[in-house]
Each structure stands twice: as C-alpha cells, then as structure tokens.
Amino acid sequence: MATQGCPCGNYGNPNATCSCNQTQIQRYMSKISGPLLDRIDIHVEVPAVKYAELSSKKSGEPSSAVRSRVKKAREIQRERFKGRKGLFKNADMQSKEIREFCQPDKAGEDLLKQAITKLGLSARAYDRILKVARTIADLSGNADTDIMPEHIAEAIQYRSLDRQLYLEA
Image (cartoon, rainbow, N blue to C red; front, side, top):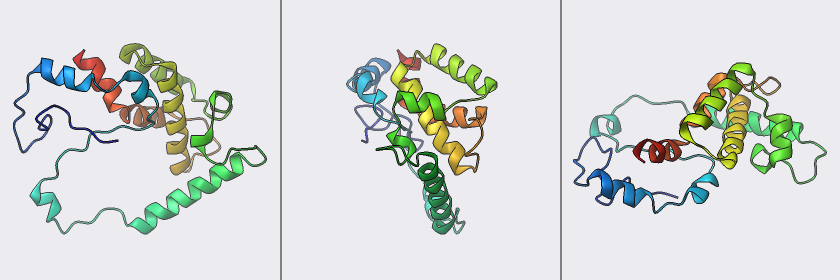
C-alpha cells in the first residue's frame, strides 16, 4: 500500500513546499484506519530522491549480498519451525509462536514497553514489532539469541505511520 503524506502530495518532500495546513494533513491521514495500519508489518516514509543521488556513481550493497543474507535468514526460519504445521517463516507466526520465539532481552523489553506506552500502540502492533524484530535478528545472524534492543528499535522505526499519527493527533 502506498499513500501520499497529504492532499497536495508534498508533505515531507525536500524539493517542494506543502500547501496543506495541519488540519488538512490530519484529516487526510485519518482516512487510513488504525486497524488497517495494525495489519501492515512495515510502513516507512520514502522521501523523493534528489538528482545528485540518482546520478551518483556510488553504489550500495550489491543485490547478491542481500540475496545471500535473505536466503540464510529464510533457512534459519525453516529450521526454527521444522515440524510445525503451517509455519515456515516468521510472518506465519501467531501470538503463541511470537511468545515462544520472539523474546527480547531485558533492555529490549524495556524499550518495547516504552514505545508501546508513549506511542499508544495496540496489541497487534506489539506482535508485529516483535515479528519484524525477530526477522531483523535473523538477518543479522542472531538467530539463536534473544532479540536485542537494536532489533526492537529498528522494528519500531518501521512503524512510522503509527508514530506520525500519534505525534500529529
């Protein structure tokens, strides 16, 4: 799902000026229901890319390296759920499996508690954050350890619409 940040489409665009007032932006964003957002694991803002970045000769991480990391994480997940009917990857987990396989350490739990409390996130968002954090841990090679605070922090960052709606309400 993709959406603009406001009716004119320029909210947050460094290359254009938004002509909408705060009320218009809030009304526009409120059309996206909270229960719908809760069902989306990852939502992030993607700003417009400046010409200098598009024309740059610098290259990022090669696709082959990303593919290798993803394949390794998927293998970790297949092994984790071996013998469990209908479970093949982290996205397949329900609440019971999330409680079993997505345990953050104490610092991670404290961070998650603070985010849920301050942002007013739902129980469904809590589960989504834990599943995404488990995947981040798998991608970083921490498959057999607790979910660390940095995994929780990154997963919370992927809930940008939750944070944005809370901050503007």
